[in-house]
Length: 155
Image (tube, rainbow, N blue to C red; front, side, top):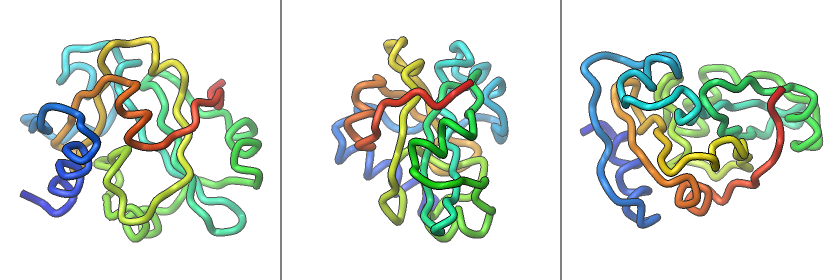
């Protein structure tokens, strides 16, 4: 088991989120592919998107698979201008490679915001530390586990 997958599995267990991550036959690089693999709606997929503030601080935005982040709304929540975080910074701060960034189990705690659309479902799915692993959760359990703030940041 990879270090990333082990970290997510441990975080899920610590948070009391039942079940274990599942492996998909191929790498999943889009919310649409993840939804097809899980047999759910695209909005039931949690996209973990990282932005870097002008200060250098990273911010994690957990959004429903079909939604897009509104840069102005995201920046207002962060309290500073934001740019997409680069691949090396994401890996260094979270311990995850792009395509496998999980919403929890990061090397460094991050300010986290959750799209209210995710709360519309009984079950949501998210990356589990690799591009081939996903886990399911009740949205409220993931909200508690991540300490995220529910906020409107999509357009």
